[in-house]
Amino acid sequence: MTQKLNRNTGLDMVRATEAAAISAARWMGLGYRDQAHRAASEAMAAALRTLDIDGRIVIGEEGRVDTAEELCSGHKVGTGRGDRLDVVVDPVDGLRLLVNGRAGAVAVAAVAPYGAMWSPTPAIYMDKIVVNRDVAPHLFPSASTPPLPGRSRSWRVSNKSPCATWWSSCSTAHATPI
Image 1 (cartoon, one colour):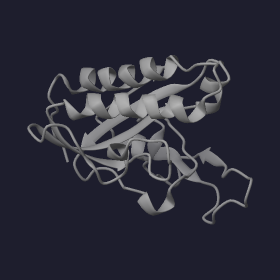
Image 2 (cartoon, one colour):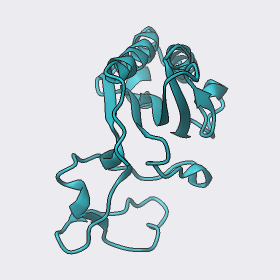
Image 3 (tube, one colour):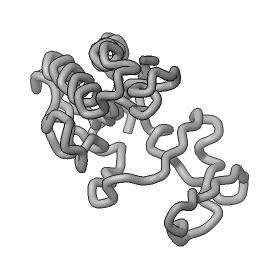
Image 4 (tube, helix red, strand yellow):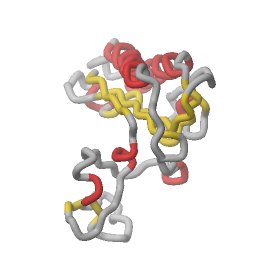
């Protein structure tokens, strides 16, 4: 599944995350959670609409009341003219940090060739881990059952049981600090 992306796709993702980050930053430290997330979501959706891609969101913002509907899994993004891509979005990762005026929140967008990413739509939310491509093949969950409520699943690195993560299949990804 080797698909060469348009050389501007990476910069387009930067523009989408920057639009979300700038819009969210206006609400930093004010305590208005819903307004901050809505502003970031609308800005990211508007930026993604203008891209020359034929994208579909595989990991989006479903389950949130204050998000742009366009950023939910399954929705199309882009103009429809361009590369067919899977898209992952999170207009504000670290919303609590943002509304409390603390550093560390980011806006995230990533793309991969169409069909390269699994869509966990029924799961709504899950634990995530991001690693580079060198580490990803050696990462696997230490238990095959879900974690107990209130507990995170532990992950460990091994060279015995390879497992790819969605991040390792991304062609380009970008996170902009807010």
